[in-house]
Every structure is written in structure tokens, then in C-alpha cells.
Length: 228
Image (cartoon, rainbow, N blue to C red; front, side):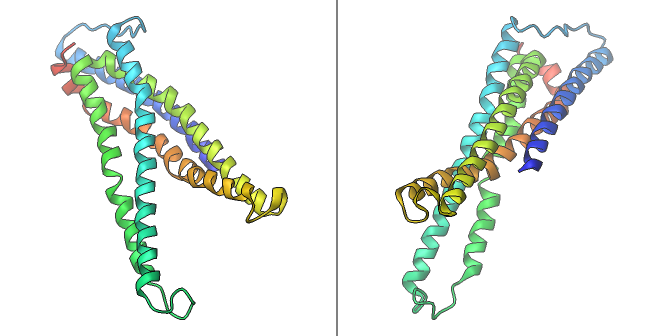
């Protein structure tokens, strides 16, 4: 839990450093092309402002996609477990061996397949933003994603951990212990809390760093062919 907080803070600092690197990269490209550019990223600039809103939305979209992915993978395992209980004779009574490999295979495939769309969003967003709004819009997008992503990652890690610990606390015997209404409610909360603290929260750290890296890679393309 402590390591996750450290990772979030380091990701924010890394994103700020990469944002400065992006601005320097744009300046190098402009100098090489012999062009004079405006490096004043004023928030009243429409392209910067639009990029700021786009960037602020990205962590929420990314978190929604990863949360949905966890739900799909978990549901696939539930269906498989029910199938095994139904088709493997004696499994419910403990007299037969379950097919553990099948569940592991489902989780492994889901962990790869379900990350395709969130990864595409993280890679495509800086390119599309840059091609439409130019490098001013990209800087705004990076700033918005860093600020909202940093706060969202902290919120998800802390709230997810709180839900998880609440369930463990009730299972220790307080508030009626296991089997009571409080325990049932805490299980529901932990169902959301686990992907909050273990999937979506930590993944946002990668998102804000990946946005900056992709922006730097495609800086030349954005500088030469953007609409604004």
C-alpha cells in the first residue's frame, strides 16, 4: 500500500519532467526547421484549454475501461466455476479435483485481451489531440491528464484500500462479524475496492507517463501536420 502511494507521486513528477522534455523537443524541431514558434502556453489560449479538458477526461475514461475489464474477467471465471460444479461429479462434495488450469488460462487471456482498448486510448489520444490542436493542445492535454490522473489515482488507491480493510475489520468480529448485513455490505464494497486499488489506481500512473512518452515520439508529426 505504501509502495502504491510512492508510485503515484513518482509518476506525477515523471510526467512533469516529460512535459518539459516535450516542450524542449518542440523547440528543437522548430529551430531545426528555422521557424519561430510561440512557447507561451496560456490557459486562455483555446487550444490549450480544449487540450486541458481532454487530458482531464482521459484518466476517467481509462479507469472506466479497466474497471469494466476486471468485471468481464471475473464474470468469465464465475461462469467457468459454475460449469465445473455442474459437470464434474463429486466436486461440490470435495471428492473430485477442479480444473484449476482452465481458470488460470481465462485470467491470463483476459489480462492481455482486455488491456488492448485502454492501451489504444493511451496511444491514440496524444496523436489525435496533436494533429487537431497542435503542440499547444498536447501540452494542455498532458497538464490536464497529470493533475486529474494524480488525484484520481490517489483517490482510487485510498478508497479501495479502505473498502478492503473495512471488510477485514468486520470479519475480525466487530459489527456482527461474518454473515451479518454489515459483512454482506462490506463484501460488495470490496468487490469495487479491489480493482480500485489493484487495477485502475496503479494503472493511471502508467497512463500519465505513457501519454507524455507518446507525445514526445510523435512531436515531429504534430509540429509539421497539425491543423492549428
